[in-house]
Length: 100
Image (tube, rainbow, N blue to C red; front, side, top):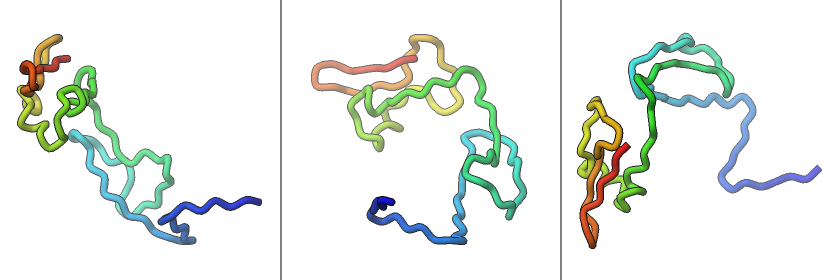
């Protein structure tokens, strides 16, 4: 049987891994504290209001992720209408805006 080596990967029998996960919105935790879970187990649920669309603002505007908060026109919780600008940045040629 062939074995593969992955640098930095350690497998330990009986290892306990603790991860802190935070829901993007208020939700319900469906497991009890200290309960053993498997990798595919659902541990919490939340509902996203409306249709959610992920937008890579940094990619569209060619800015760094650190610049995104300053480029945003819309703030967290603001309603967004179709084709309404959500972010803007200056470019060499002209200002650039993106909308949903």
